Amino acid sequence: PRPELVVSSPVLRALTTAQIVARHTNATLRTDARLESGLPPATALAVVQEHAAPGGCLLIAGHNPTLSELAADLLRHDQPSRGDLSTGEAVILAFD
Image (cartoon, rainbow, N blue to C red; front, side):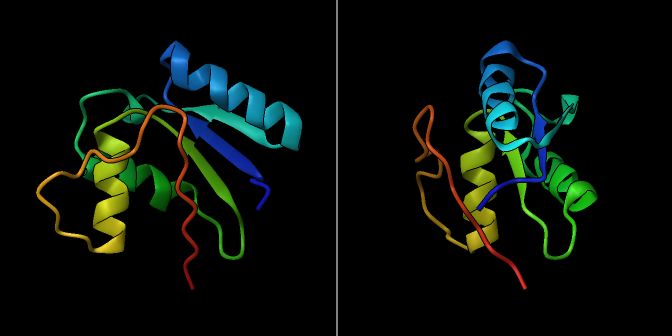
């Protein structure tokens, strides 16, 4: 999937990745402080809900453990260790 919109944490390591993806996919890039490190997954979910478009593709660039926990919440996985994503990994989720 090619994102039309990339929303990134303003922190350099996430923003650098987001800039690369946006440049190579011609996506619009926005930053959002709600994706900074240490915030709860519900905060990142609010970003997804705000920017997701029906039939669209949205890329979120942020930090762990928030994004791992968000993915687990969206997939309804109740695991004792929820910080399973490594640096640079991605999760692709499709919703009806």
